[in-house]
Length: 393
Ligand SMILES: [Zn+2]
Image (cartoon, rainbow, N blue to C red; front, side, top):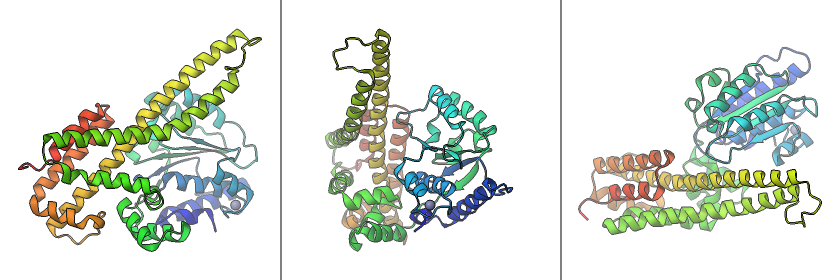
């Protein structure tokens, strides 16, 4: 099984990447390598598998058979231990110029194993303006064997000058049937559950997998989708908002706590803090305090981002719910994400107008924009739940 087999519903992108990998091999063999280039931009909606596609491409470039899926090179890429592949995952809200400059220096080194040196930059749209400018220079004059794989939701999220120097790989939302098939065949999920999870996640494979395999995730989805019916008065709206924000906080805390602890332990080991301190160089102790402060700042920024991401994913579930209501109201024959809540959809469809539903979808989208503009989550979500309320209740 080759590395591209895991990319669900991305046939067009796979054709491009296979050709480029072949051209890359040709280039290494001294040929012209037409079709290979040093800067790539992978774009696509959340869950379409941007990072997976970039990773598969990296494996195909390293692999002597252009992505066989079972050699040492392919394996090292899969587990993230290939010495010539650096994966950058901005953990905070932005990725700064200092980190970018260091990254560019590392990327300029010669490959250890002789083929390529590849940087896979996830969420490259989080690079600050200064960082983007530094990145642009690196992409304009790449060392002969350095390859940049940038990932962002859409080309518009990147600076136009960077965009125009990258070859674009556009991923699409995979069809429900394809996602269900992957869950059933690769994860042994029973067909009915696979079908439900694929529909509910609307083509987002990672989310579909979590929904299918983790009961807690299904419970959280249930509590989010119970919100529309619960909004019977202002008090209920405030409470629903509080619950949503609190659940997000708890989930984010659970995700980040594990990471934080291991990072701090690692740092202490490097700087010897926790030992008696005797004989430790004073400069090193000072350096340790600075590094710990840096780490704490980064962790705080990551916690904020995780909480925001969790709320956003709940809001997307709500958007899907009201979009289903609208489809029912308009009698559109489309696949409903929330077929499992047909009774609730019908209820809301009957008791409101399509205009009401559109207004509600607007309110959710406004809340998403406000959250990404740093508005206090409780305030933003509360004003949304109040807009979602049935006016006559
Ligand atoms: Zn291989």
